[in-house]
Length: 455
Image (cartoon, rainbow, N blue to C red):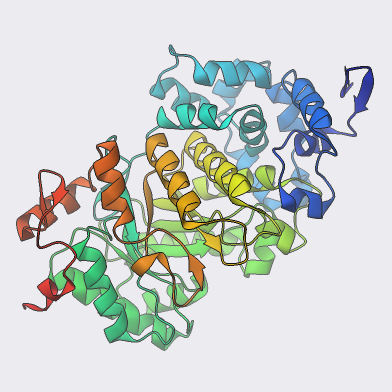
């Protein structure tokens, strides 16, 4: 296979498909750290030229980690719809890009084709797209799921209420939940990152959040973002679990660093279907982020976009209610500034949707990254216009426990107003019943958490 191109009299030779994919990636600090990035803009464009003519069959034959060595590769490859794949395997990556962006390509056509795509195919076409391309293509694809309510319907934008607390204080978290609910945050999930991962602490917070949900008859679900094994034990002991959470990596070695494997995830999924207090049928919640495999020395020489796409291929096995890319959380070693964070957020959202995942985004950055609140809000608007299923809702946009910057409780209603979007329908009806929302707009009661102390 000849993987070379000549631009302006200089010949660029690429070692293999993995090298070609890495060199075609947008500039990322993590790829430079891994030693896989293009050395110049000219080399990047040469790689894209070559990649555009690579067939989907070739990409399937050359996964980032060999089939016999990696269970993530096996999960993704074994799930390929062979009938659809036979129809598209001769398609080149450049042709796939044009097909996805064509006005004549419908949402149903994309969903059918996505069942024949591997993660490397999804990543490859992403590398040939501009930011606007990624937005347009993603906006065509709606992935609708149901737990206690319905996420992903066209014209809606959900918000995860994230009431973290440094000491896991139930009263502090309860107050933060009420504030979030008063702004319309919490329709995707009320999800807490606990500082204490013990069974007792996790069970206590599950019981408190479930009590809030049942007392106020809120059409949403709770989740404790502890290790999946802790949640599994909590379910077995009768704790009221809504969504079951776990962080994912795009390689078996990366998941080893998280203390998980496919067998454990399979078991957790089975327990969720049996014990979750939610209606379902979608019970799982995953988080990912470009650079996690590199931080665990588990990237196998592949670039960040390829490894991230593989996370979505693994997640698809469990038909999750939602998946959240914590796009700027890992740090500037992997995404250096707002330009790279923005690009990664649009890439992740598109790749997840193309894979068939209900995608959300933690529009965020760490305090040592070169980004600002205005740039964070810019990305939130771009994702909202792209059809993202949900964003974060954090008190003041400043997480007191995890010490990073994200979207606030009032950002989702601002985006809904700006872009003509609504909360998830069951949650909207609940807010209207309480007088917090009228005709899609917050009322004078909104934003006052003391409203929830009335009973």
